[in-house]
Image 1: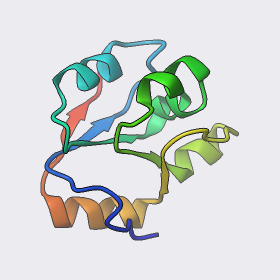
Image 2 (image 1 turned 180 degrees about the vertical axis):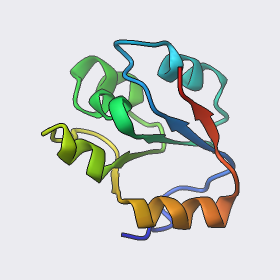
Image 3 (image 1 turned 135 degrees about the vertical axis):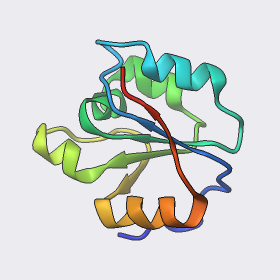
Image 4 (image 1 turned 60 degrees about the vertical axis):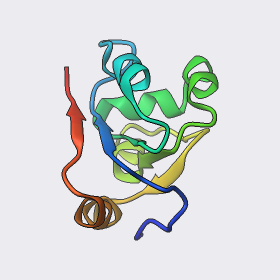
Length: 102
């Protein structure tokens, strides 16, 4: 799925690690600009399912990688669904992302 223009994006922040195992998501939230979008992928997708993180992420432009949710048997509670083709299109349109990977 190609992402729609749901967010006015300046920078893409890719979060790869679980917020229960690293401070990457916390740091990304601290340093992000209002126009930055977060993409949760790999183990970070758990944040889109955990109530305490859903509360923290409310109002933050957020995409969650569908394949990573499915691989872990999780259902997202917050954020927009994104597949790999959509991520590639988003990066092609907005430029190189900032990656947070522990």
